[in-house]
Length: 310
Image 1 (spheres, rainbow, N blue to C red):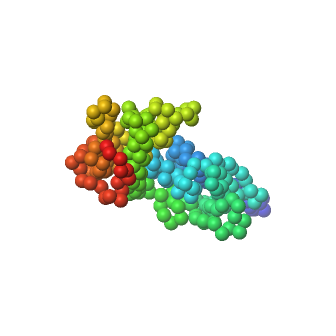
Image 2: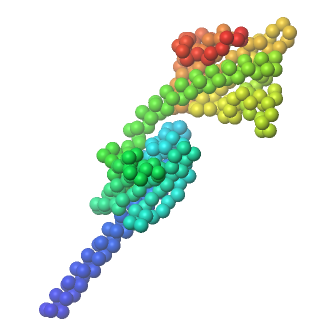
Image 3: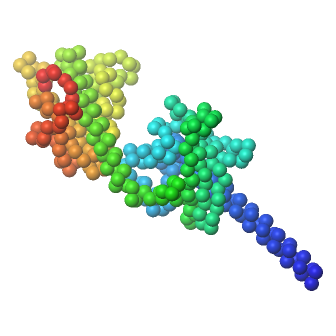
């Protein structure tokens, strides 16, 4: 009997040790998965971020527009720009992720995960790396769920990460921001075209002529009046069309039209914008087609500011 009791005690001890090891291994795996997600969010690497999403959320994430995906990644690390990530393990065993941008470097600290069956909860602290007093610290408990043997992000605090339900809402918010950016881009193009006309006494042949020169020397083919992205004709979810529609008596082009059209109607933008020869900025929903001079006039406060003839 004594021998049987000793064997029973040994078996229970081994089970306790095995259970503790398994729990520790589970906690470490969940922490590593969250670390990988934060590293991907820091560098705005969508391809590396997707594997840490549940199947349902990954499908919704892939349907999002690139600006909406970038916004989600920014929110994960509370930064407005992509950063350079680095990882480390603190003296107390906590996982540390640093995200360095030109403006600020944030430090993310992961406390030990608390596993519960197929769930794990990980306390996360995000703060400015120079903040030793913790005045800028944000605290949240991240929920992780085991799906097909892999740890995936389930929640941010009490808020479930349910991308399918947020997809439409986020696209709508991005559309509004894209439309405002398109209005500003049209204003920029009109001012650049007028500057070009005053400098070279004619209109540019194409929108590309307004872009920066590779040798930083301004010339008619590359006047350096708008950035490279806008000069390419596609920026911020909109494509831009510039057309010369008239000529003066001396033979030099005198009139033009500029239009902004959503690159993906209903996701990157809804309204089309049109700036015609009458010098008026107009806007209307054309289901992704080019606007026209018959469209309603946009509010004067949003119109491009220029007093030059068109």
